[in-house]
Length: 251
Length: 291
Ligand SMILES: Nc1ncnc2c1ncn2[C@@H]1O[C@H](COP(=O)(O)OP(=O)(O)OP(=O)(O)O)[C@@H](O)[C@H]1O
Ligand SMILES: [Mg+2]
Image (cartoon, rainbow over all chains, first blue to last red):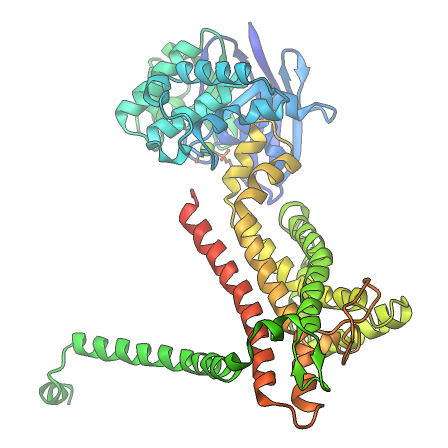
């Protein structure tokens, strides 16, 4: 089933950069959809459209539609707060909030009005287990989150968005600063998570794209060049430009 | 020629660097020297005057005897009064400038105005306060009028330091907070303000410290030459340490020097204590900072 439906989406920043040009794609539930391509292709911009985080940026024009569960989230009357609870995001650099591990995890829930200690504790454990971090931090939940290693911090960031029980998780190069072992842990967690969530991932390398993608979309300078099943895109792409990029003959 | 120089001065770069550092150290000491000298001089001259009576009694004998209690209390009142107006307003303005205002000609003008306000001589604030608060708004020569005048003078300091403290909170915290379903205001309240707080408090104290030590702004707006009782309401005039010091140093003949320096010492301690508090808060926050 298609969780997200993007229809002729175009986006221009106020400095005139046209970062997305007429992009249309369907993103299915319970799968990892990968957005890949060279720098400046508009991948992050597209991700930020899906939780309206672009509202914070200097965006001049947005055209087209983004339907999540059939509802156009770009419409002005959208409840962006509710949307962001439903669509979690993990950024390239792990940014833990300046508070304890536990407080990082309960931050969003408390803002959503959850006060019951039992519910919060439950969410902490559940989200840490999902992000494969529970065993490493269960005895130090009240330590400052900044004391964790980079890889642990990134899984904490993943856990933090999971604590809100979102339906969609957006990840923008979540492993770009991590060593191979931490990267493996994050990727393994994502494979588990896709059973219940819709995952949209911007990988930090073509290798990661090929490893993780159920579906893959190749972006070049704001345009969606090719989109299809990962197994097809990375073995037999239809487009010459996709092939050049994958095989490293790009540019 | 350079070759020759090398022969005469086989000094290597190390020695030159050493000499340079030594020079800088000496200069650093030279700048601190006058400050230390002033402080020591005031302590030596003023300490003999300090006694329980001096701190807790009214001036007597044409202010040549007794204590300076009303001036101490008055300065405390004025400092609190200034804080009441300038702190909420200053922080609100800083939040607006740093978190909400877009970079438009209007906000740029506001910023430039704030910077220029900080450069206005304090006596001009005094005249302004006289015109606006004392006369036009009919507050009279009062703690209220003086506090408001001091607030206007203090606001630029508070606004600019608070804005800087807010801006130094990493943008990524805001983005993350918003992405977790926080509103802008929740983000400011729960993350940004909390992280900026030590910097804001430091700015507030430094601003209030300046207000506590100023004479000119309160001269026409709230300071009294001598009052036989403590002020009862914000509409009363008050004695204040800096003005009292001015009075006993210039307006009263045959003033015992000990009392002048004793008053100066009390004012100095008052202001230095605030300064030390600000420094302490800042350094502790730096040590605890998690980013
Ligand atoms: N906030 C912004 N303001 C103005 N222009 C922006 C902004 N964010 C991105 N852009 C521009 O939009 C284009 C697409 O950027 P985007 O970050 O979406 O690319 P990307 O595919 O994620 O690249 P990368 O692989 O480097 O992360 C770029 O030309 C970029 O300069
Ligand atoms: Mg990007």
